Length: 74
Image (cartoon, rainbow, N blue to C red):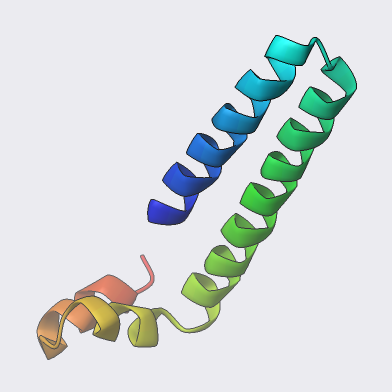
């Protein structure tokens, strides 16, 4: 969540600067770069959550029963 917030704020600031200069090509580059970073980070987290769910849950809790319920396939 913090990554996406930082990415959105940074892209928004750069976009506003380029909007003031009327530089639409740079706006497209900034937004496409932000989208690509967002997709890559989302895909990496998705792969980690599918491949190693118990390890990720151990970051947030040490309750074994909760980890068992969180990693159980429906």
